[in-house]
Image (cartoon, rainbow over all chains, first blue to last red):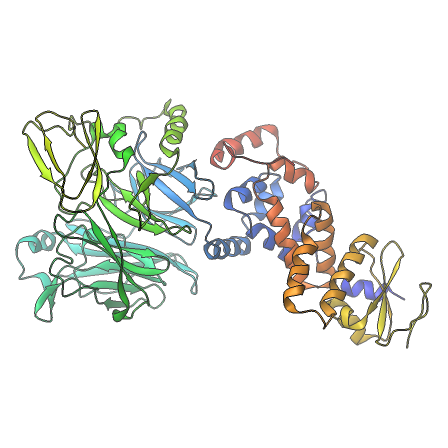
Length: 470
Length: 167
């Protein structure tokens, strides 16, 4: 009499059961298997996917991928993709902040894309651009090593471009935005202001879903190249415009692009009354804790900086100055061997420090840079990171990561053509002329020769000729 | 219609149902508890039958599920108490037990217990070696040694230098 009941409550089991009857995991119903796996950290998930072939296939199930993605962004399992150039050029590393381990990620696209930089990371994919042939853009999943070159459609002759990449959680589409300006205009605008408001632009948007580029007309703002790639927040990308006449004065503004409806919009900058704001190119945008923020250098000297946060997105009155961070010199920048062959570029357009994100612990993650090789666009997570708490201004390096990197990569050097830096220069930080400095604000550590000097506001330093200094 | 069984006559003030496990043992459950399981509810709605035979749930697992259902059907308990009961319920259970439990709750469609157990399983599986996963799930490694070595080489970043647990 129970046979019917049994029938009723028999449920369809996980689809792989037939393929692999020995697999105990396959006994789990599909929804539950997804639920369990989507709760695992990415490293555990990958481990699991190696247990047998059917699980490997299952780990790529689209439903699992999207559940895992939304879950890990919700519970804030923090990880960073690092793009490093030293000791080997163009290496990708994966840093899981929970265990502070750095892991090397394969770059299977390296053959077709020898030089690249990261346009963005969103929805589990990295968007990489070939820095030598910028018409070539790849989407890459660092965990499955799947990569995909998006169609080329662009002639770069005499043009410069500003980029952005993002995944929209509602439309579930990945888009790459490219805003190109004519090169002549670009050089012109540095000297003459006559053309500033009338820059011709060309907006092109690639959608992963349609796998095609679309022309979206023009944008009436001249976006700064240093604000590329755009900062992704609330389904929108954000860049900084060049200064335009606004209320009778020259102002920069924040331009946003909505990935869902493809519209540009403008956000007022937080401190339009301040003269210094935006004059310095070392200001930049960032997304902290789901809020848009701008990083502004603090006078005098403009080495220290403040972070303004837009507490409520789109509400101009909600800008708040949240942090002010003093002068720092991370230790590893000083001891790092790459000092020997880097080039100091003139300050214009070069950002020495950049705000990356805020950690669960409340610490800010900052990126320090030593200056790129000329001709290379900036990459997202590069080189060196220091943790800074707003209260103490004390920094600590991510433990072991340089050591780890060194140990890890030495084995890989054999047989690699990448070990030579592209440009070997004698440029060490040694001046033949002597000079001094007076620290006006903040604090830090200065290194002269082999000695370390903690300095704070009011201290003066005199550097004799030929003393190596950092 | 009220059925009695060898465990004694029903003195219940409330309606009850009898659930039989695959081992043949029978459990008396109040209807208010039974209907928390979507599958049981459906059966009770469609049939007068008061004896339900579950052919793929064993005694031990069924007893746990019923304990859970009874606690959650108890109107005298606050939500907080029920939540802490849930925590208690999954803690300390062996992975094997949880595996049966998750299957049973899925069959019986007790959604909230199902996800509580799934979460617990995920917690246990975190940072485990692939060998552990194979053992616990009875997974036969169908990679050839060469294929496995190749995978390990390609995805070295996921393997190396990690404090993985094998027990």
